Image 1 (cartoon, rainbow, N blue to C red):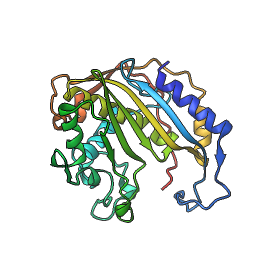
Image 2 (image 1 turned 180 degrees about the vertical axis):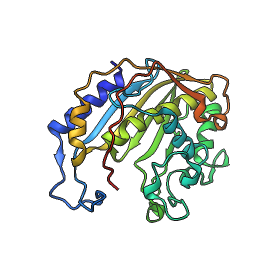
Image 3 (image 1 turned 135 degrees about the vertical axis):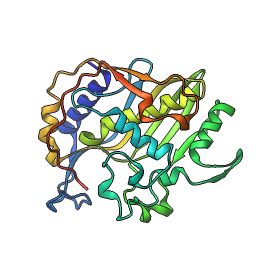
Image 4 (image 1 turned 90 degrees about the horizontal axis):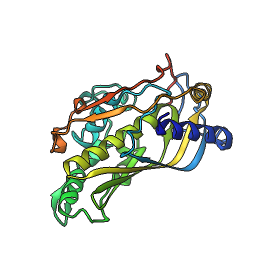
Length: 276
């Protein structure tokens, strides 16, 4: 059984048994038929994944690593806010007629700032600091820009990464304000585990722990039966991750720089309702 499965299953069990429903409150998300999309949630969930032990990908529900990495690179490498630059359709519901999601996600990471080390964006500043001053305790990215929230198609869920080097090990903390356990949890975990491994490799470091801090970990009302079925499954062992060892420039990574070996997983459900 993969450790990522253990965490996912326990999180879902805790939400279902101890969570609080928001059915008495007005909510923003809704289903395709216009019905309010209510959730049961836990506040302040913290999970730790040691990337030296295994790559955190769940097997109780099939995950598509290359699609997840493609989206991550769309945000962190291409710094794009247009779905026309993305291979998948996961962002279609939040884009306008031009394909733009507004001043969100990749847009924020591409904004140039006057850092003490020079003018650059947040991604280049982190990469620069990892090589120039790895002992720094200031390696923090933030895309929850209050000034631009009104111009975002979707306000950032995963909004901050903190990078920290201990010896020769790069660790990271992913802060997420909101996490849909069925559709997004496994996706986000493998994305930011991949990001940590990429940053470590191009900086001559070893990837260590990814700490995932979730403010609002929730399950939507129409997802409860699906989750209840998923967490009864017997997980497979964790697969092995191959990442192209020849890449030394973060901007040279592609989705094909990654490959899962020995990945067994249960197929995705045929139709999952999505709240928007």
